[in-house]
Length: 379
Ligand SMILES: Nc1ncnc2c1ncn2[C@@H]1O[C@H](COP(=O)(O)OP(=O)(O)O)[C@@H](O)[C@H]1O
Ligand SMILES: [Mg+2]
Image (cartoon, rainbow, N blue to C red; front, side, top):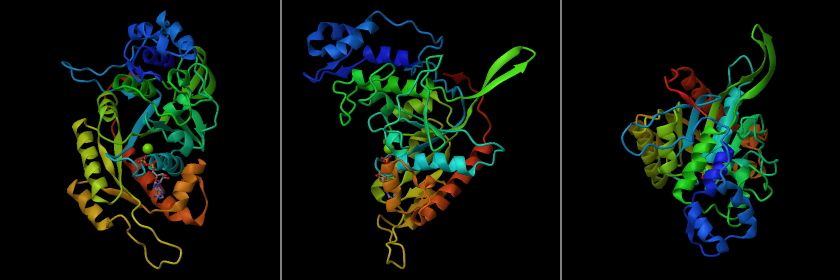
């Protein structure tokens, strides 16, 4: 629950604005109150008394030793696809947002697909901007105290970015828990605090869609439908977040994004190896920024390295290349404007849309061939 998120974050570690000294526990906060601004204290004091937990499910934890970690499904979500790479800046978030939209557009379900996008990048959340939700209202809480996703372009989204923005100053927002709630202030959290936030973004969001009330023999019930696919935008690297996701969540498949340079490919290989270790099945690789064709050019230029080399690397890893996305200004302009290329109609982005639609179809095909893992549900 986000109450739990706040309670746990308030009792976890953060860095004092004035001393830059990390606080690690409430006791320390108590003994160092002179370091806290009155604004911060007002919001921390209520948590000392403890807030009753309305959710009977305890916060998930990562087992350290002994029993193997238990993977589970996320309540309200049928299937999960992660978009990852070992490296930052290769286009994971851009691909994740456009993949979510592509899944919406290429679904062959007899009704509109229900697609979600979860931003797990705590230190560099991009989803609010990419999806045009930077200035949307603050997330509300459901009756069960779960965060209700914000929606745009037909996709439900959740991001720590929504809870940290300056405008967001009421419960369940976190801006009052950061030392300086300016927009450009980085999140300065220690590992445990990040892990708590990640676990609660994974398990304390209500992804279901209310489908109205139905009357039956057991009386009148309000119905709700699960999300068909949740796309998760991962942070760069092969660290705690990736490990926890692999240990805690039954992921249906991963798309690894890479640019063609050796430095990106090396990290992409590490990402693949890590997902193999935590038994996350690989759907394939996506080559981003594969080439650039200028207005007056007669042939594309492979600015960052040869596609053939990338394909060879994919073959060595026994992975399919799901698609190639060229370097196109409309992708970055659209991202900055909160209008991903998949919802644009400019001719410049057509090659990208075709490529992403094909990736969407391949991901649907993969998902339809997946057997539901026999694991419990959490959330
Ligand atoms: N194919 C592309 N063409 C043009 N710009 C791109 C492309 N892919 C990504 N970008 C831009 O590159 C930058 C980094 O992308 P982003 O998705 O944030 O990467 P990551 O999530 O891997 O850090 C963004 O400004 C994005 O708009
Ligand atoms: Mg990103």
